[in-house]
Amino acid sequence: MTDEARALTGRPLRLRVYLDDRRWLGPGKADLLALIGETGSIAAAGRRMGMSYKRAWTLAEALNAMFDAPLIESARGGVQGGGAALTPLGHEVLARFRAIQDGAEKAAAADIDALRRLSDMSGRK
Image (cartoon, rainbow, N blue to C red; front, side):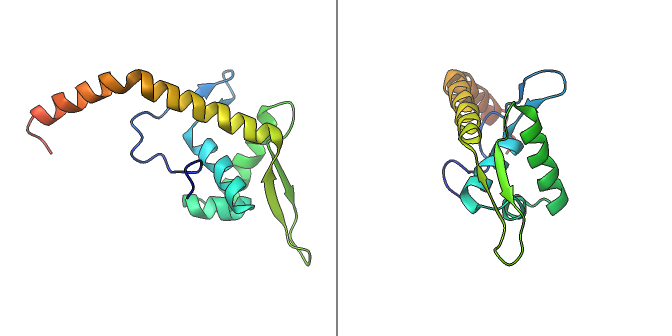
């Protein structure tokens, strides 16, 4: 997986950005976007994340419905083959979400390190 499409395992924070009470963007949707961009396929991106074909498509449709324009363009399979790609808006949304994640992690780094030190002192590992 590329840096952009890295799984969030090991990231110290898992953020969810609420656009309103029914629309949000979190690490799973961001990872799906990144993997669609990397693989050129909604199904392949879902497989890489360990989700079903139906779940990957449902999330892709939800992502497209969240904004004024689609984040993902897809073409049906068949003789010519199918595929999917991020639109320019999809790339921008993903970049902005990753920037929010990175900024929050940098801002919280000292406190996260302090929590880890306190946890290490508890003797439980």
